[in-house]
Image (cartoon, protein in one colour):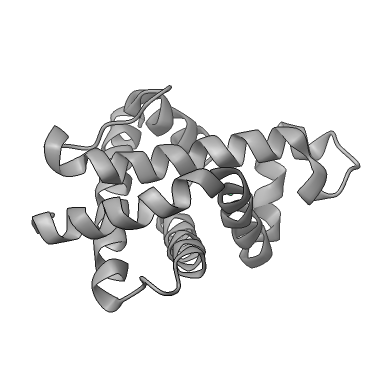
Length: 154
Ligand code: ISQ
């Protein structure tokens, strides 16, 4: 499976529009996951120890934004970098954290669905089957890189 120039262009084009709304979109992305899988909230200490509504939790907002930006920017860099690269963390750390929390394939599938839904709702006028595939492929690359590091932990 190659990540084509056309797929790169679709990812870059939509990210350019979404970028300025990263805070809102990141939160939407996380809230979608919690809607599908409410128990995922237990993973985050800043949610366990808090009584404020999810939408008002500032730590959730900043974490969700950084995860969303990291995910999208790794997709944007995929072709030029020739591999998955992440910023402000390492794939080793991401692998270790996902391993520690016992993340399995179904969790990655839920997250993929939530990410694609979030992007689709962010750029409805741009959205197409091709764009869905481009983001889906980039996401699968990121997951493969995280899983490779999870295996290294086990
Ligand atoms: C794990 N990885 C990325 C995003 C997430 C959002 C909610 C719950 C778990 C997650």
